[in-house]
Length: 398
Image 1 (cartoon, rainbow, N blue to C red):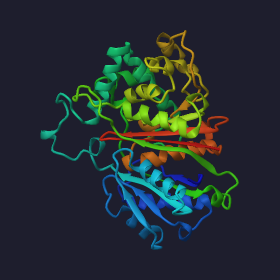
Image 2: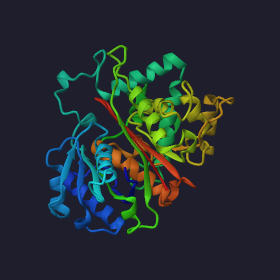
Image 3: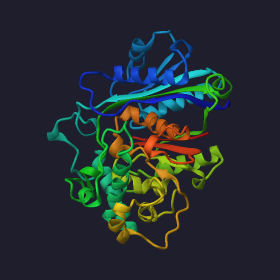
């Protein structure tokens, strides 16, 4: 297998684009990634297009916008991991030697749809049933399982939201760029206990794109190629548990173990992580699933300041956070988590998220993240989980 690098990256601002369709958003991201790489579309040998709601022909429609060169097109749908699956397919196509240059684009248009794209009849909604598979209920139940098992306070979940909304204020590409103090998060409208409105990711429209090359080819375009050190995908293994409560943990734990082994690193080596915080409860659980802290330590980790930019709680929030801190807790990693604002603020157009998470890491590795820059960033992890199920983890480094 050959080494593979990222030489071009782009993400458009997530939001609502009522006057444009997904192919136009994706084309913009693709053209910006080509410009970033210093390439033309005729130099790209294959396109991998991730789009969940318009999968069939999505890549072909994008090429109609940026250049129909007759290259192979692979269209991908894989729940929330759709974009990162397209990225991974492009990675393996190059690593195997099939191509030297490939483009991966993740895109989605959800602004005209309902909760997480749900378009069904409200009268027959699964929400509220025992064992509901609607996402707010799934991640609400997962959070309450953590409360029951470890005594996690609801304020700890809310604190993850406070952190990500704070980070978003420095990200011009985020759908929302507004701080939300702890009392505002706790008192916002309840969606699915314990997640309030400000603890749930917004849906919307967006796209992100990446140009991948063999490492040898990459040096023709840049003096700073970003190496893909690991690219892993897992799905749910069978576990003997209550089937009314989906397992959101095991596939991430399995993927993280493989990814660390592939990259030859541990959690302590990471500079930053973009993880799948579709709900605030998910962020706390994934600290533990990704090995950023030990089991039962997710609450202490967010309150310690370690996953915040600068590895400390901002002065304005210290009084609120002090009662939530465990003074005996010693972080095992100082990796900043969701410097972008995470899905909670950046937004979550399903097919775009996987590539966008990778793009955020690349911005930091290049020193291009502006006011949210993680200083000295050298290695980053991008994590996405889609129930149904698929988990992808990509580790990239300078």
